[in-house]
Structure formats: C-alpha cells, structure tokens
Length: 429
Image 1 (spheres, helix red, strand yellow):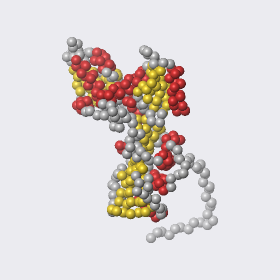
Image 2 (cartoon, helix red, strand yellow):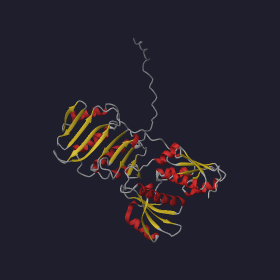
Image 3 (cartoon, one colour):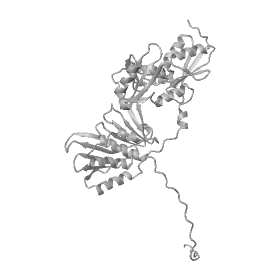
Image 4 (tube, helix red, strand yellow):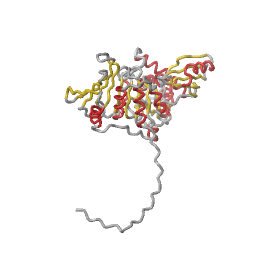
C-alpha cells in the first residue's frame, strides 16, 4: 500500500560537474522516508534536501532508474530530467573492456562488486594493509572487520577491482602477498585514483573541479613549429647518406634505409598538428614480414622522430632497459586505468600510455593531459622494440626535466670613466 502523500516529490538530474553522477532533490513532507529509500540505492546526503549518487562503475543512471521505480511503488512522485532519461535509455559499454566475453549484465555485476569493495574500504569495513603494482594494475591485501572476518587479496582498480583470493588468517594473507610481489610491496592503501577522489568529493558535497582549481595547471606540451618536419626531412637526406629518397607523389616522400628493412613515409599535405604526418615500419628482411609500425602526427617534436630514426639506423647492442624504469627514474607518475597503464610527466605535459590488450596501438606517447585532446601523438604497434620505447621515454623525460639552477648573479663592475669625453653621434639620415 502506498504510504506517501500525493505531494511527495523527488526530482533526479545529472550532476553538473561530474556526469553521469545524479542529484536527487526531495521536496515533500515525507522526505525522511524518501531519503531512506535513496540511501539504500547508494545515494548519499549532501544537504537538507539533496542527495548524490556517485559510483566508480559509472552506472548511476541504471541505479537511479531502479530507485525511481521503487519510490513510485511506495507512492512517491518522481521526475527524471530529460538529459538523465536519455542516459538511462542509452546502452553503453566500456571501451577496450578486458573481459570481452562478459555480457552487459555480467559487466554490470563486475562493476557492482567493485563498488561494494570501494564502499567497504571507504566506510572502514575493509582495512588495506599493503599494496603493490604488478606491472599492469594495483593489487592489495586487506582484512574485513565486520561479520565473518575475511582476509583477501584485491586485484584491479575502480570498476575492475575484484577479490582474487581469500585467506583464513591475516598473517597468511600478508605473507603470501609479500611472496608474490616482493620489492614492489608498499605499506597501506594505494593512492586514490582520479575517479575515487571525484566520488569522495561528491559525497562530501564538493564538486570534483575543486581539486583541479587549487592544483597547478598542466604545462604546455612541447610542439613542433610549422616547417620543422620539412626541414628535418631535408637534412636527413643531406646528412645521412644511408637513407634513399624517392617521391612517388607530390604530397608524399618515401625514405628507404640502405638495409632495405626500414621504410619511412612523410606526408607533405597534412593540415593539422594532430594529423598523421609520418608512417614508420621495420621489416624482418628486404622482402620479409612487417615487424612493427608507428604513426607520428605533425605536431610531434622533431627530437622524438630523430630518436626513432637513429634507433632504426643503428640499434644499440645492449638493451636500454624497460621504459617504465626510465620514467620511474624521471619521477613520472604511474596510474592504472581500465585496460591501460599511464605514466604522466611531473608537469602533466606528456603522457606515456600502454594498452596491453591492444595490437595496433599498444604504446602511445602524446603531448597533453588527455589523449582525446592531445597536441601530438606517437603510436606504436605491439612488437615495437623495448629499446626503442626506452629511448623515446628518455627523450620525452628530457623535455620536462627540471631546469638547471640559474647561475648566481654577480654584481656588475663599476664602469670605467672614459679617457676622453665621448663625441656626440651624428644624426642618422
């Protein structure tokens, strides 16, 4: 039986600062009852008449629809903003989801489990003892403090975090974690992801933009000036005799290495700095299969292109190590996201990204904070050499390395008096 009065009303709208988070506004005499129902569906209070639903699985529209349906069954009048209704009606899925065999409902179940783990950690029901990075994502070991006490290993971040293993004792869980991850183990929980920070700020009634406004803006990424690539290409043929040039079309120049295993194509007609200007490929012989390939956009700094071609001309005899090690030594910030790992420069001007499940563009180096709005990019296929990746990482790190301290300013010596009075200058004609 409905128990809410006829004027009981709840309005749902998309959050203006963090979509698809949802704001519920209660304007009715039985607001407490409505808020109790909303709380059961994950909404959290942010004011006397407002509650917010913010989830790390980005399924707020789906759970809002379920909450509205339950409220209607209890006699409440609900209103859904048209923009939110469009989100509810739109079926979507995560790009490059690492479990492609999952159906949409199964993906939602995985996200719901990750949300429960997130809520347990935030509420203190699950205490994290240690964390580590396994090379792909964040792992952790923790203990539940309520109900049947469990000790668990966690794997993944945000909507992909899952319980991988359970243990009977905390000592056993911690010892196994140390055995598995060795020197990578760090005390306490891992730093919050960007999404976790945004969710917690929304629950506290603060827009996520608050942290962005107080932090220093990202530095402008280095970008090649117009004509730099053309000049570099001309110098390549003038100074490096091992490259042979031919131009099958007016808009395209081909550079072929004397080994006949490397081919470089340059497009003279690119119009925008994010258009692909260079295509580079290496083969296992003059008529062999392609080993790997790369594309380079027109705004890419020339030194990065030079590093690639120098590597192809004379590959190093000794391995240069892992690109992750290069960026770690340069104090770049690592982060694991759904289906990818990124390293961000300290000034946030350049990002190195790895998508281990991709084949065509396994590695991406780009200028700017966001790949969708990057100033330039270099994309390399899965089989690109580790030495080449490390070389690119080294050159990129050099762009954002801390500048050398300015030399001490010495006091200027007092000017000597002239031996003879200066002659007046004749006026210029």
